[in-house]
Image (cartoon, rainbow, N blue to C red; front, side, top):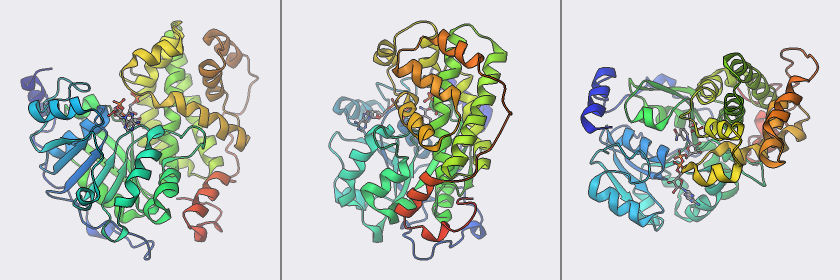
Length: 412
Ligand SMILES: NC(=O)c1ccc[n+]([C@@H]2O[C@H](COP(=O)([O-])OP(=O)(O)OC[C@H]3O[C@@H](n4cnc5c(N)ncnc54)[C@H](O)[C@@H]3O)[C@@H](O)[C@H]2O)c1
Ligand SMILES: O=P(O)(O)OC[C@H](O)CO
């Protein structure tokens, strides 16, 4: 799309973004007085380093560069770095978009400690499966007395460990840094955000002050942020919705129509809520932007890579061929492995997620998977399991949050 059309669209919707958008200070609590805090209130002219120059990393770099933060975007590809700095365009992703001049691409070497020390914000927009390696490398450069605001936007579960990002951060950087980390999730296609189309996301952290800082950094009339305190539920929402987006795409690809898609969205929400509750998250989190909001978006749009994987499977393509030609990550594929393990460990019923696993990794025919699902006996529409919360309990122990283990509800 041309630059002229892009700016016309943005004027039609919300005009120029505001340079800073602070929330009232009374929203800033001091929940955990001994916890690590990031160093600054990153409202104006912050130095932001974005890891990942794919669709979402570039899009968020553009969003922040638009309001004149000094944005650095790390890419693994030397060619991309050179091309970006010369033309202010990403040659591989969002190729029609002209980026603000406030963004500089860096890489392919990882930034050194001196560079990291100078940053107010580190924003991680790389797929979940590569996060552990990146954080391990970065850990020696992170100083808890001079900590940048840490923001994570990936939506997945790590293969092998079944870990959420919170746990990956705790393993690699320690519990204090994990508790200060912030997570953004919600219905947010990169290609719409760069057009300044109205978008809303959830922002969660165990340290509310950090979530509020993240909200202040990102919030714009066209990009509304809603703050919450259940990062585990938010992360599970983002990871799980990708699995149901694959199921929805599969159903559409097989030729089933609107009733079937609505069934998958609604039964998917029910499964997500059951899994999340048994895991130890708040069931209410799944009713938010990161849950039903993103589920609805990705289950009903061919702009979703996860939906596209499902759709192509439904039309008879092989998974390997789809992944080889997709050109971008569909987190739901690898995440389905972790989801299957979590479902088994929790002993909950999640037949749609199980069917997606069987099609992706056990060679089950998509039509057979649908037939088996449709032949299941009737059941109650929603039966929430008791909040045993074993996985969340283990994670909270790792974070040293033992004071939260005595309550009936682990997370709020
Ligand atoms: N695209 C969206 O609209 C969107 C929206 C919200 C969240 N997300 C999430 O953001 C994350 C990134 O998605 P994306 O859309 O930018 O994906 P993408 O496929 O467009 O880009 C992936 C990026 O990760 C980098 N990468 C690949 N392998 C790597 C490795 N081994 N180490 C470090 N970096 C590596 C790639 O170079 C690229 O910059 C995913 O978890 C996705 O679910 C995406
Ligand atoms: O393209 P998908 O399926 O990875 O979806 C992108 C985002 O998660 C939408 O919120």
